[in-house]
Image (cartoon, rainbow, N blue to C red; front, side, top):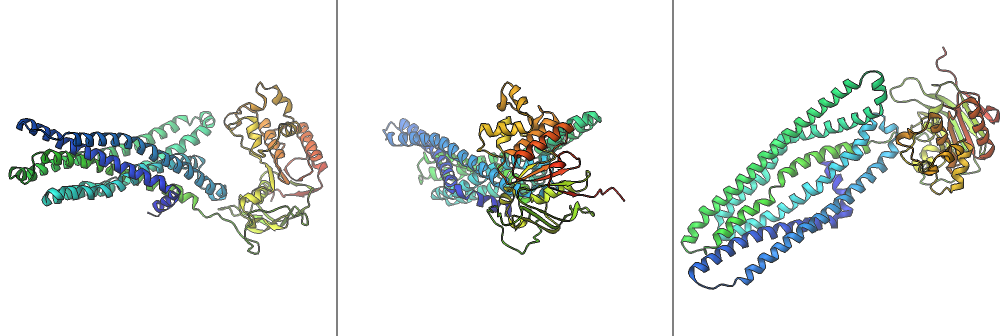
Length: 558
């Protein structure tokens, strides 16, 4: 239940909305039960008055009936409005809360998670949590308040009636939900798990569709998805059968309560202890009172699903980030301005070994990069050059040594402060499903039109963008599928150039480009950009303009 307690704590900012929703739901329920009971009394009283030929005051009960009908209608609308508003606010907050805690984990804390699984958690699993308020918290709270009131009302007319009604409420309001919890917990958890797996596989399959078609794996993939769908359908049928049993049990209990009212109250009416119209009033009251119990079986199923989804979400973001503190234990700085009395970067016997790997990605790296200096890390593919950027950006913790950024150990800076120092053009850039302008402004939302055009000119994309009918507003599609590999690489470099960060990191910027274009782009950047530059490359382009070259050994050599 720790996950439910955490969920409740996250709902605290909307406590007013939550309580208002519960209050409106309770008022609507009481109005409906009162309407039914009063209607039964009123119709019977009018019939008896007509048979006896006497007059009666029908204005008051008619007014009560009309008032209860209005309250029920308005209350139902207001309750839907308030509860859905609270739910939407909660879901929006949960997604933001989840992402804020997920982002610092990448990639070290998420190495065992598939991208499709993370997508499923941030999308579908959080949507499951919205059911907790609507389907669990509201109906359970209303039942806990309303049922004692109903028992007091029934006991006023007959203690035996109140006792029997209390037993029925207990059986179908508590015992039955507990049975459903026991009988359906495996199916509910399995359904959530299977649904998460199939969503993850669908995302992964979409991303690998071309490869599956090339290697003839499409049929096997289709078969796997169909089997998962059948398992999900099987779990859904099991839960639906339990819901059918529960609703039938509640209907049976309601009719049994009606029978108890008849057996108990008829003798009182015959003896003159109670007036005749009391009988239909209590009959309709007993039937209507079970309305508060009808949502409880679904609440149990929703609680099981919520617990499973909450465990998946909170279990992921509560993973402790692995950060090896090789500094003197100084507290993490929330903001760090460049210190011009120190070199821009210092690597002091730094090394990184990935989990489950024996050989280090790089080891014993000692290097000083002064501000404004251009340094190249040169070596063959697989020699560990890109891992330097992974460690430098805080994506993976160092396993030895230390990195100083402006004289401060980089593990003493929080993620935001650390990454604010670097403008990165990665080896495998991601292009968002947005316009060219939108993809560039991610690096610097305050950049002007001229700033954008300038960086496009530097990477030889200006003419291409100008030739497009929509120019900078051209949509690039999912992962930039409307661009070639070389254009994606150059757009990523342009995005890094647009960033105001003081250190520029270029990881294999010539990948996918011909030698002449690579040389021209690097020459333009190094001539026009005054920032500190760290170039990762396995080629020779641009090295003539570099101040310092550090060679990485070929790990494939004996």
